[in-house]
Image 1 (cartoon, rainbow, N blue to C red):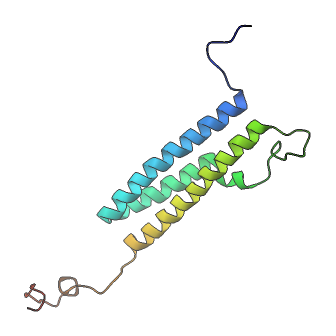
Image 2: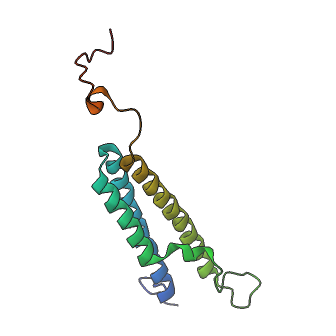
Length: 134
């Protein structure tokens, strides 16, 4: 019996793998951008992060993972364990994408919207004593 030197997956499994890889790489880059945007309080960073989330979602449509899929019902004669394996992973990545998108929107709201009381310099009070009242 001979074995091929490299195992090859079918086209469907390869497509699922590369879609998951693209989504994961995009989410890692978005998470890094989100942290930088939060630390710098950058409005441009927020706009770019939201656009990237929308673009990544538009490209890969991760919300489709939560629908029904052919071959994942164990009682079906078309049951495919590979399809169940990849749909489960795609659902996890889609849940992470939803969380990252919500985090981006919340960060955008915190960065763009004014929050807190203005300080003396922002309000134009002209208070030169910056020692905290001591």
